[in-house]
Image 1: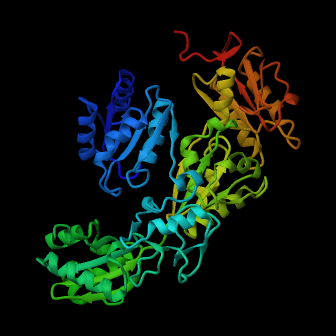
Image 2 (image 1 turned 90 degrees about the vertical axis):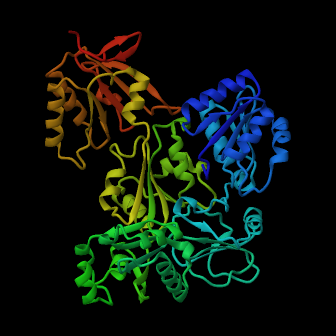
Image 3 (image 1 turned 30 degrees about the vertical axis):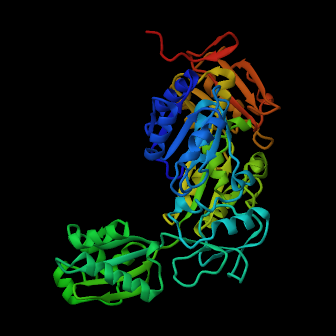
Length: 567
């Protein structure tokens, strides 16, 4: 939600005050501002990052008009009607974070968010916040209005970047290439130099500065050395993500103060670890002093960066500069069982941030309307699960922002496992849970999973049947409620019958059972039966079978497994 850390809540009516109190109770950063509304607005404007005013839009405009100063510093203002039907981002949509605040208010109150900024309405990237979650810093020379106008109007915009970054989807009129005279450009670079016009320039957090220093070295000397080194390398200090040094310098005041001047942390490494790196300019003197022949260069290498400027010296300090690798982002997204309303908000957000979406065509088709302009889809067919995972991970390794999607929960008999088996530390992984198939089936059947339960896949394509059979016997003996995934297909038509036989060895034929096919889809079918009456021919791969325990009962046409056993 942009830069909003403190939210002021203002209300003119009792309904508004009630809703304001509710938000204050669920948002720790929110506070109700009492007293006359005009006075409350004035105080909030000076103290808060975002304001939610429970007043009509006209009243909100009149209250805020005398207070507007600079869109880069004014708080975001959202107004909500007395019935809490709409949350309107009135001002500060991007810089003030009002657009995100309106979405958040709407989610909390069951309202409809109203956002009118062109980039949000058309699905185009917000240049004011572009790359903010990746640590990008916008250069003060950027011409946001000119480039934004070209972006929204469909004119050609160049994306100028030496490396691919996980910035999310970009519309078709954004073309990767070199900057050209008069062509609007989005530039991502840590290098210094002339800036073409019109353009917006973003500084990625891509550089790490290794620093070695003698005891008592001043912050001024270290800062001067670092800045001179960056100038020599043609690199921007706005892209410095961190300093790095040997851990015996943890209490070195000059080093800590210098890092504070750059607004970055210091990463410290043990001397033994640093001594394991082959730095180009080792020193035996340094080894004798701190236990490693290199501090500045080795600290850069220990940070995982590529050395781009070798060691430079001043009287009491040394400095080296490295560039960190781009870390792509992989979203593992569960889409839920079927109905669009069950696609979780986290999944919608992840899809909106993904430039590539990988999944079965039937799953991609379900969420195609949620994708931003410029999103590319890759849809390997059924049976090529490993290939799907490898494609998604490889795109992320290249620096992309990628979503790998599955129905239900992606971590349950789905794509998370094969993806995580091949994804290394070079990829940031964000897992988005979804409503599982067994959870959806249980909700439609009643509450069969109210006590201990397990899920078993009857597919022996990846798991030997002997292993599955052992698990069935254990579930039967343990009196677990059992949800069967992949229960029966054209090529596997005997496994479910065998599973029924195993369960019948330990529980009554009258044990309640349920079949749910195509949960929360237009073709949904829910059928209650018993373990003894369960017919395998009524089941296919789109069906979840739930078999109750010895305690499961039918109540008013619903399966119920009590929370506890009778004492």
